[in-house]
Image (cartoon, rainbow, N blue to C red; front, side):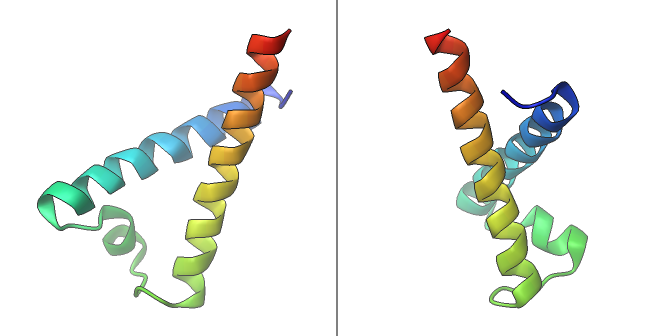
Length: 69
């Protein structure tokens, strides 16, 4: 299981990503891309997507470990 600061960071990344996903879907606005001044398809945008995916996997793992203990 991850340490509390890492879990908190992962949870914050996931929360921002979920909010951003909703904004993209319903308001056609990419908050994270605009805040970080990334262009879609750039290396920075792909790295940000990988970080969000990694945070999601970490949170999924931690949740599974918590429920299986």
